[in-house]
Amino acid sequence: MSANINYKLFINGTWRVGGSRADLPLLNPATEQEVGRVAVASASDLDDALMSAQASLPQWSNMPAEERGSLLIRAARILKAKAETAAAALSREQGKTLGEAKGEYARAVEMLEWNGAHAGKTSAPFPIDEKRIIVPEGIGLVAAFTPWNYPAVLNARKLGASIAAGCPVILKAAEETPSAGLYMIEALQEAGLPRGVVSLVFGNPPMISEHLLASPFVRAVSFTGSTPVGKQLAKIAAGNLQRCVLELGGHAPVVVFEDADLSKTAWAISEYKFECAGQSCNAPSRILVERSIYKEFLAKLVRAAEGIRVGAPDDPDTDMGPMANAKRIEAMERLTKDAVNRGANIETGGKRIPRPGFYWPPTIVSNIHPKSQVLHEEPFGPILTVAPFDTIEEAIEQANDTQYGLASYFFTESPEIQNRMIRSLAAGAVSMNHLKGVSADAPNAGIKQSGYGYEGGVEGVRAFQSLKLVNGVKAVSAQ
Image (cartoon, rainbow, N blue to C red):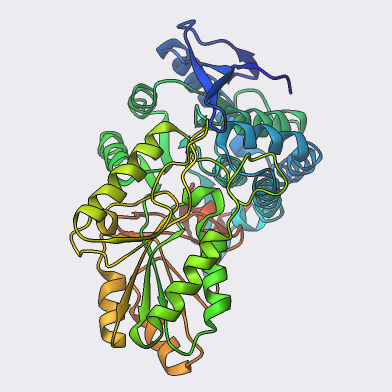
């Protein structure tokens, strides 16, 4: 890929510039320099995408599910062959290290492969009893919206499930990381995707979402992003009763009990937290430590954080690259200042690194006041708060004391405590003695203000299907 590139829209099987003839600057967060331009979709572009998707629906939905699955598997192989180049582009646009970008594309390939391999199963009729069956059918056109933090894997997750279900998709990908959309579409196109089944648009997010969701052609909405935006999309979708799958914010706790291996736990938290500069809704952000080991563990966690090497994302010695944009730096400064003003201690980090690029160091904050903004607002950056607890009841109360409910983590070897924590932590996903992201084969969803609707696994495909009840199965073919 050249040093600078103009990213276009993909509509009805062809690449085009935006109808408005406007474009947006694409910045490298490691240098703050422009590295490309991104096309802006007009209302006319969106109408073309809607019409072409709707025109493709009869043929696409009636294509045998196994053929759709084979197409996804071919696309996965094509994407895998291009992963080295695609990862370099993603690293340059988003700021994550080259190693992280390569790992993300490996997960994206896995997403396409899993949905491809299971397309036949998830679309096959299944019985209720000897006289009734369920016939899964694609729900119709899907409008999908993906963010900039993990664009490759989230594009693959939404496209893979929708395509497996038999649905056309209009993908509004992140303007900050357009290459992830380009490589995904190219792989699907080379794999033989019919014209109109998938469109790729960029531009003004509110305008695009309002225009697409105003169309009765759109039958489902899949969004990953902030809770306020997700709520707004749900309001708009209510107008046409469009089904919503919303993966929203998180504020994950990690509860560390005194019998945990403190060194391994500190290393595991630091490694997982500071991946992608902490810009992950599943990343831990609130560390709760049993008081008897609090000081010892805090010291180990600080050492682990200070061992994270911050630098240029294409440097093989770098562990953590820059944040994605200036807004994230502003958020780190605001949250840190508020915590300090309320009496918090900065154990390490806490100030922007004085060099070109959006660099913020791993930051650990202790003695945190309960009303500090960082405890109630998703930090979405490399900041960890650390606080002690005395009883398991107190730990559970503090862990659940958030509007979010996406992920929770805990470390202990006690079977009794393990069972109690699994039952008591209020989150869509709970991890014990390790920290793990979302896989292709398992359903994942948030609770409370972290959203609703499942992604991943069979349930992720079902999100884009209607389950038609057929009575009198002896008189009705299941095919």
